[in-house]
Length: 109
Image 1 (cartoon, rainbow, N blue to C red):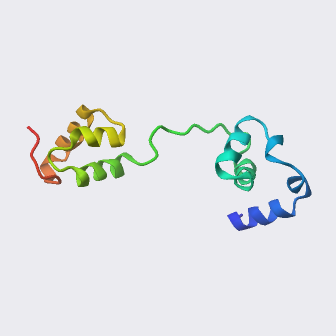
Image 2 (image 1 turned 90 degrees about the vertical axis):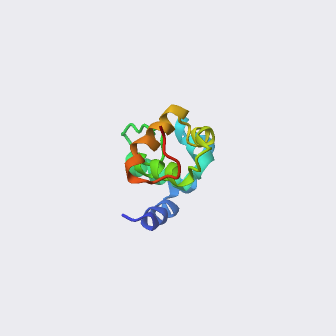
Image 3 (image 1 turned 90 degrees about the horizontal axis):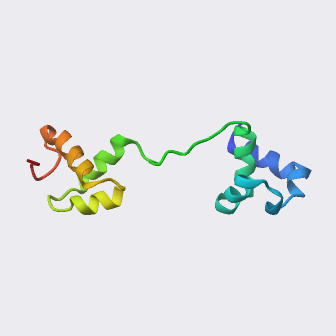
């Protein structure tokens, strides 16, 4: 079922049309305030009964590493650590790991 089908089903559902965000339980109410009532209804119908944990990191390690490598200018380790919520030590580890690939301008010693 596509998102469009889900929305059409929601809009034609009398129960859905006659309820409000204030009627939603706990996390569903919080989500509705963030992403809208229709989207919460879609999530509910597709994932109800499942426990979902959102990882701290939104992007893959490979993507984040590539971003760090592309933004590194030889002097901005501290800024990169803040931007990506890593320690400076971890940023240095990423840079050192990619040292042999010559993916950044300054060689880490």
